[in-house]
Image 1: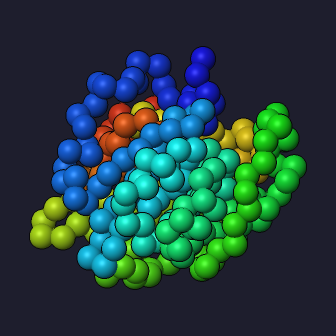
Image 2 (image 1 turned 90 degrees about the vertical axis):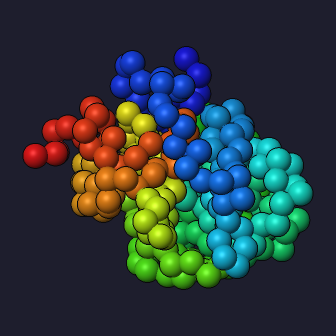
Length: 236
Ligand SMILES: [Zn+2]
Ligand SMILES: [Zn+2]
C-alpha cells in the first residue's frame, strides 16, 4: 500500500485515470501542477491577475517551480508532506507566506513528525499573514477561505468564484478528494468535524466548482455530491 493512501480515505474502485482531467479546464498559464514527495502530494501554481500563488509545497516543489515567479505561498495545513519545501521557497522567491496559526505551530513542533513515526524535521517558517475563515483578496483576485478541520486542525480550503461563466476553483488540501475524504484518525483528527465541515462549507458551492485536491486527481463538487461514498449519508 502506498503512503498516498495513508492520508486519504478513498473508496474501492476509485482510481486515478478514471476521471476526466479537470485540470484541463485551466490553461497552462493559469494552473500548473506538481506532484511530489513520499505521499504524492499535489502543489498548484495558480495564476492571478497580479502574480502566481503557490498552494502547498511538497518535497521537490522548489526545484520543480524554480523558473516560475511565485508571488505568494499559501499552505492548506501543517502536515509535513504539504509544507516540506515551504521555507526553501519563501527564501528563494522572497514571497509572503499565508497560513493558519495552527499550521505555523505544527511546523515549529520538532516532535510532530516523530508522532507520525518519522525521524525527520521540517524547517520551521513564520507566517507573514496568519489567516482563518473569511473573505480576502490578494494578487488581484477575491477568495473565500473555509476552515475545515477534522483531517488536520487548522485546515484551510481556498475558493475563488469563476469569471465570465467559468466554474469556480477550490483548492481543498486534504479535506475532499475524488471519491474520498481526508483521514480523520491522525493526531487532532475528528470524523464528525470533517464531514460536517464538508457538508456546511464545501457542498453548498456551485456543483460545477472544480476541486483541486491535495492528493490524486481533481474533481467537482457536483461529482462528489452524487458519487462520494463518504458523503452519501449526509446528502438528503
Ligand atoms: Zn494532510
Ligand atoms: Zn496530504
